[in-house]
Amino acid sequence: MPAEAAPELRSIPFETADGGTATIGDFGDKVVLVVNVASKCGLTPQYEQLEQLQRTYGEQGFQVIGFPCNQFMGQEPGSMEQILEYCSTTWGVSFPVMDKIKVNGSHAAPLYKALKKAKNVEGAKGPVMWNFEKFVLTPDGRVHRFRPQTKPDAPEIVSVIEAGLNA
Image (tube, rainbow, N blue to C red):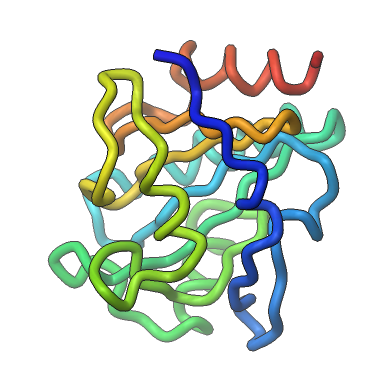
């Protein structure tokens, strides 16, 4: 399934963990992996693979951006301070973790309202299914969507990252 073109995603503002505002464009013309994260989820060990991707490809123009979300069975209940401490001490996270957001429903963050228009490899679009749904944005403005169970270091994600870095 070809990726969806959505260059406007790089200009949609979101809140940072410290109360500021940023956009994906603020990170430059990088390959960006946007992921909704949670600390108390069966998929939480994906933090380790996300961090490894950041360390492996970060200097080549790649960026992981995490968005904590408590919409799935209350699996991200902590304050931002607790979330950031957990991420750094438990998983050694060096990539930015933004302010807690909603990814579904009428109060979904504008960035996620736009991201959910992208289809995944099965051709499905719409609501985020669970924690750790991944969206890879390439510099050409395309969005590649991967469901939560797809590990961050899965070949289909790594190939999209590497192709975006080499474009």
